[in-house]
Length: 477
Image (spheres, rainbow, N blue to C red):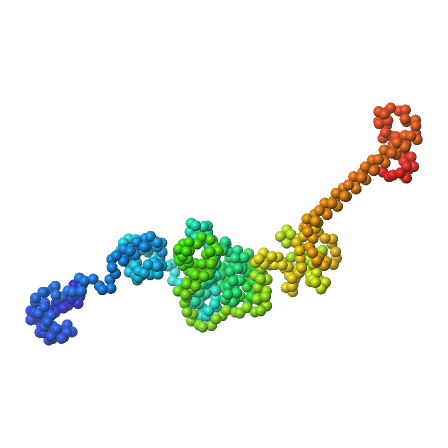
């Protein structure tokens, strides 16, 4: 019996045994005199049974049918065994039309020993949470997340994620890893779609920050991404620990729980299909469901200037500095590149000047001078090195075919070899002619045997050096 029923029972006992009057019982029980008389009459007939609420033995009108619980449990064990309680509630309502509250669902799964209660770990320290920014896109938290996004269907990939600090609005993209070209592609698409953010909050990974000890002394040392943000006037804020940018870290764990299941249901197993699914379906639904209204109404995204729009491909490029040699060539990645004049005939670059080699997102090479103007250039082979002129040459109207150049070079080499062989043969012939003429003039050596002549041949030539001058008109040694 409840406490209310026990109080009413003790009041009726006192009334029956004439310990109190009916009017006193009505005032103590906060009831009318007529109602006290009615309760007293019923109590004498049925005693304690009448005091129990009659609706206690009846089922509630809002109670779920037991078959609904059984169907829901079977669906959870078959399809949603690794889903969270919130996701199970959403999927049962969306796909199967079964509506449960999350507390009812959790209690039923715990009662059937399908799920177990996890003990929460007590925090070591009491930490205070940083308040969200007031306005839209005032600060973007950016991070990467390596995970088996396609489970056993494919290998591990990287998910690049940005979270708006004020609204929890997310932008995500899959890539092979967190290299500089993936970061460039992510932020180039972001800026073209949403404009420039005021600041970016990220970690100290080598793609974003030079972590060498000398970099603390020289603040001008920047990575390729740091240079891009400096040109676009975007502030970079570096976190000293993952807890500092906890919003994007928390979002990574949420996506590891939700996005994996959504990709599994959509039967997606590669990056291209996953990026298309993110852009067209998932991000729009996720932001609509979990987006938070900011405290302020200002949008702090900065509009791109016209010169920045024109130079966007140049800004988002891998840039390295090279020095121009005396013959107006530069070396880059084991290649030799020849620079030429512009159409007007004026040189756009000088000897020993520094030029910037830009590798664009389409892998094309472009070379610019200090005024950000592009220079005409062409990669050349070692066999096609031009003569070292003092002036910068004009560009040819049509580039020479490398095969023709190789054939011409081979033809010149063969002609030179043949000329050298002819010279040697002519010298041998002239030597034998001189020796023959000398023996004819000095006939006394004709009777000498050949063996003796061969032994004394060198001695004879040494003794007769003064006679060789007479045959200079024929040839020279």
